[in-house]
Length: 119
Image (cartoon, rainbow, N blue to C red; front, side):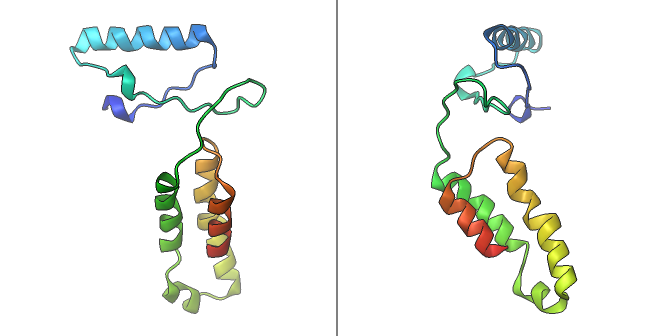
């Protein structure tokens, strides 16, 4: 496991954040690895009742998601699938990809419109 591949879920309270920082510092001391706290990003999930401010994603960060969604439905698949098959593909794949990302990042209106156009 690499430290840049870790997701930690905690309550968004100062005590939890302090505890995670202490754990990361202990991890750093035990293994001799350096953890760059400047590269850590925090993404609140399910914190609607709290007053948190996050920057919206830049267009350059959202575009790869839209391109991946578009690549899931090449033109040849549409010709060979019947209506029920196309509906199943859209429901299972093309709808689940943005839903996964929406758990962390709210998508801008322009991104939702592009994804809906592909679907």
